Image (tube, rainbow, N blue to C red; front, side, top):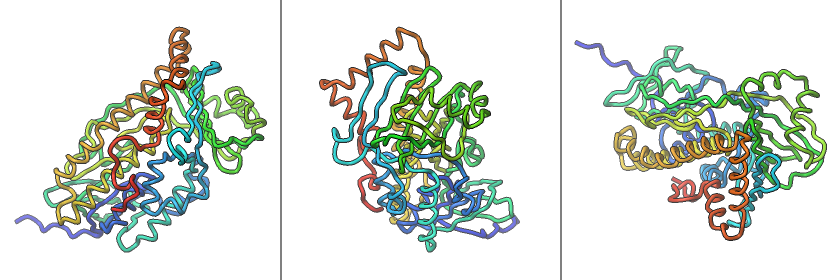
Length: 413
């Protein structure tokens, strides 16, 4: 006779592995709609809430803001979010540039810039408020994952067993769950690193985001609260460590060379960070009783600031499927649900990966004929005859193009 199955220490309908933004948002969306949910993370909540945890900011597109509003998170962070009213895209020092203005497509900002620490704190507070349906398990390390006809088993390093009917991998580029399920990835290193920092400047930014395309890669200046901007500076991987090793005056001089003087005098504020840029795209967004979201499914180039938004769109589609399935008394880990999720996300994820990769390859060089063509292209999209094309691009960047899930439409699940 076989040994009896071990009783789980923790049980739920849905088990989320990964306590980053995408993981917390999918856990909140499910629990807010009455689905019993567990979220597992390797770090304790108080560590994730610290100011020094990281120095990044997120570009939250309008569609993503609507999702956060609908699940009760946005009111907790709105006061610390800076609206993006305009976007200016320029090719190095070329006189021609592309200009997006939110007034061309409505009365709402194109998006907001939010410091990651503030978004994390809002998400953690919302998790606390959903204690009846949402169980955080942290700190905890996942060391085993299995699926069977009845559900999933997640083994923790401390010996505990978590059991559910569906597992959601939100554990980043190197996803343990994705690897345990045998899902292969397409990966490419760009030979670029992203350097990020915050600057305070003399002249108000006016809610304008700027993206310069330099030979080494894009250089983005994103408006923040309190007359500050977040810088996402793409540089060659061989040069980035040398720049990071400079003292503050030396780093500031290199920053100013690329930033320009259009916002007056600059002052560095807070730490600097850097990380290698790569694309990681899962060949399948699902496995047996497993769904991938966020970077576990698709880590893209930061050129358009769409990484978080792509993950939030995963969440909106998957959460709606889970909630509808559970309300019908059906199995949220079924192949029917997973197939619907794959179909619902296939086009968006593949298209954005290709677009960001193509833009980086197109603009990260200084070949004169290529530069001329792309400069003319930017200028043409900015002309009046191509206003419909420009509006289409803006609506895509805002995350409100095509059929929208309930959460994006502002409807609770």
